[in-house]
Amino acid sequence: MFFSVVITVYEGDQIFLPRAMTGLMNQTFKDFEVIVVVDGEEPLRPYDPELVCGKTIPATVVYRPRSNTIGFRERHFSLGLARGRYAAWLNVDNWVYPNWLQCHFENLAGNPGAISVVNIHYWMRQDYWGVLPRALAYGEFDLLNYSLPLDLARRAGVFGPGDERIAHADWLAFERCAREAPVVWHRDQTVCACHF
Image (cartoon, rainbow, N blue to C red; front, side, top):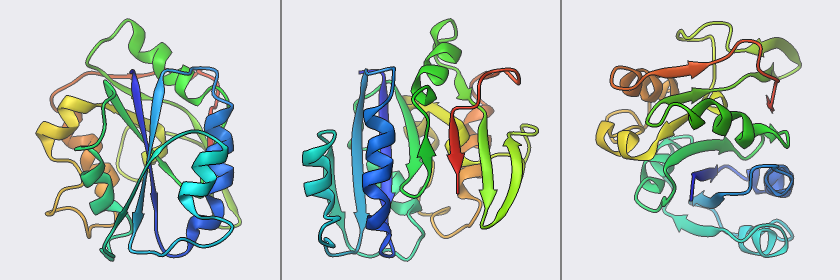
């Protein structure tokens, strides 16, 4: 298995899970697993994660006690469940286009062990910021932009206890891993996802 796609669900955002899973169903690259980690919520009908995954893509669904960490603790926890060579994280309210994993794969095909960075459309509430990343720098890209080698993410302890309450833990994860692995990013690569 090439990718482990991790979706963290918290604060009633189970309502977005059907959209996230539809984006994954439509991926042109098919060698991936899905892990859904629910942070301290009861299943909401009709958006119960196990029912949604049963109708779309089979996934490992895990319920965890509430962490109050906007999902970062669950991202760290998911590293122990993942079986892919690379981990990619998808916020449940974001949208991935059919080429999201294919773009990551193309970046990594000739660069084993590298970090893949892809281009996404970025919205912050009603404001459209344009295509990210603008640069490989703090504040210029998002968690949805990158995929990390799983073994490196585990060694680096990304999203661990020291980071789980820091709003920019996604940048810290990238920065920590980029010290040990090359980064592959093509500015002219097709946009492949949308952050809302």
